[in-house]
Amino acid sequence: MTQSTALRALDAELMAAFTSAGLADAATFIQYGSGSPTSCSVYVDRGVTFQGFDGTVRNDAVTITAFLDEIAEVPKRGALFAVGAVTYKVDAVTAKDESRVVCVVST
Image (cartoon, rainbow, N blue to C red):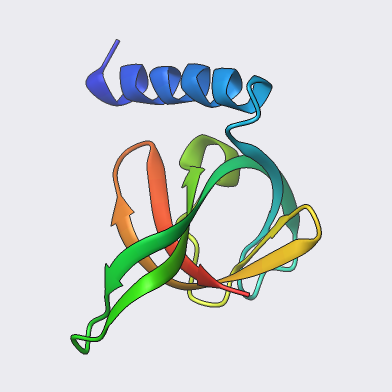
């Protein structure tokens, strides 16, 4: 098993456990320009400190962490995550590895 495969398997197990415990949310992902909805699980974090590319610091940012095994591709700016009654729009991707992607989003 490669490191990438092991990381994806570990992330999938953790996501399943956190979803069962109510610490992760079911979501629908729609890639910008695609229009094709995909079911996934996400972590929504509120009140995150984020420094934008222009040096502006926000202390109220919202991030969504999603897993590439579920959404298949890195979200483009403008992609949507629907979590319950709230729809979040991707403003920027701030982190990515072989398994997951973290996006700063807005409502």
